[in-house]
Image (cartoon, rainbow, N blue to C red; front, top):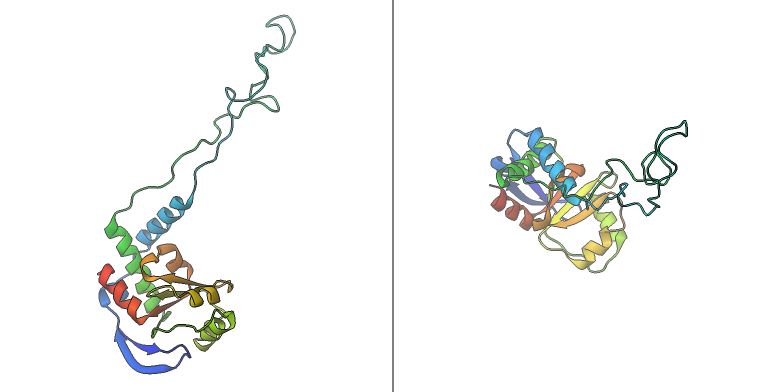
Length: 208
């Protein structure tokens, strides 16, 4: 698949790049994409939730009333879950939500979503550039030149330029990330993928 290289003004540079069919031309596997996104979200969970059970509630352990002869049910403690302020039955406990996913599965997931975006014509390749100052309007002008200002976009760059990062972080629908920090959630969440020339070579080298 051949794609034109654009500059930061959204104009063609005259250069063309062949996208690898092994990465941008495969049949997308939706199930492995779902698995990878599921693992990513699971790994973001802290798992520190905790509620006190009846043995942990700080209330009196004194028996409420005598066992027999009251005409009511027998009760042993105010810590019982049936009382307000009592312990929780089967409440949440701290746990680890992360799980293992094979590297080949994760690689297939990234290749699948990249192939899907390529088939939809939602991948743009731009030549490497840097901003002279951290100005949001400069990055907004860049998105406007590419005609994607109203779409969720992910800009994959070779290395984070501080001016570029600061210029993009205040815009709600775009994100700038380094080539070695690309994750499946950002790829799926983005409607448009902007890839710099140098980072494209890196992606092809690690995903083939």
